[in-house]
Image 1 (cartoon, one colour):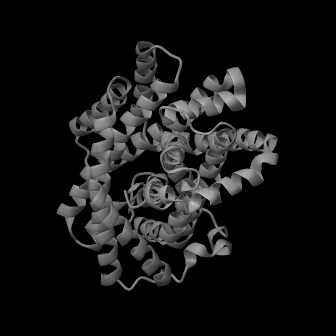
Image 2 (tube, rainbow, N blue to C red):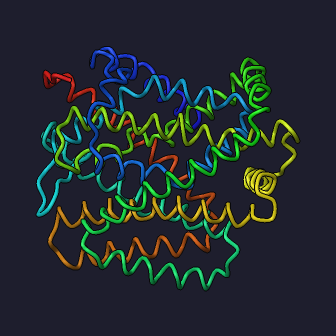
Length: 399
């Protein structure tokens, strides 16, 4: 049932993407415009949220289920839906509010100010924080513990210490950590991946053939298409609220920020996701897919490329990417709560919930969590899409 409803939503997103591309005069495809000025603070926060374990695990999962050509469907949907990234970012920046030291914005703020609907805005914020700053964080720590060669109790202790240090900090200090961490992770991952791919550059023509040979198979245009589109939504965190919140930080205007975050979206898909796909496809071209799970495939891929260091290297990358998402999730949850209320008890309870979710993620089976996230994301995206269309109709925006 949920799959059928998701299919209707996907079709709606595609038509909305085309509609808004025309509405914004195709600025989402103007690379000269996209790269002319950059809002670095917004970019690093957005990359921090998107460069979690979902990037590496999600791309591998897509290929494992949908086949090699799934990456093409991810590309196509990202291109079509990029106008929604632009519009969401524009609105997040336009309706931002001043804090003591920075700005804050997002779904709550453009729904409250733009639609003058505080009840709907509050509902959206509750769903957003519950989904992203609690349940998504469980996935991050669960993935780390399933790839790290470390005792669960020891990992939990380290986690409690590090997260406690984070949540007792000022929220702006958390964002400063992201500003330093994200470029380091990005350069490290891109450099190592490029080096590995260049070592196997002779296989690249065969891999391209493999992708396009698979593209028009029945599996690709059914399973591959659907999984590719859903993965693109997850990779770009399309319309779930993180992009619009990222757009509010910094002192750049709505146009610069919207361009920046479209560029960030392209970077995640066309650079990071492509590198991960190629690492997988080099292995698949040589050996095929005989693994019982996508985690098993990923471990074999890293062992093939890096031999005995493969498991350690995979653990390091997963830890770095998950850390980026965890810090972003903590920042998003706490910055919203601390701006909306000065009630110390509510802020304290929020911090306890965040810490508890991270610890729970180490020990629980995340199958039900993923189903819950799937439902919550469907609700968030559907409502956000309606809100964006209404705001566009009510206001004569000069996009």
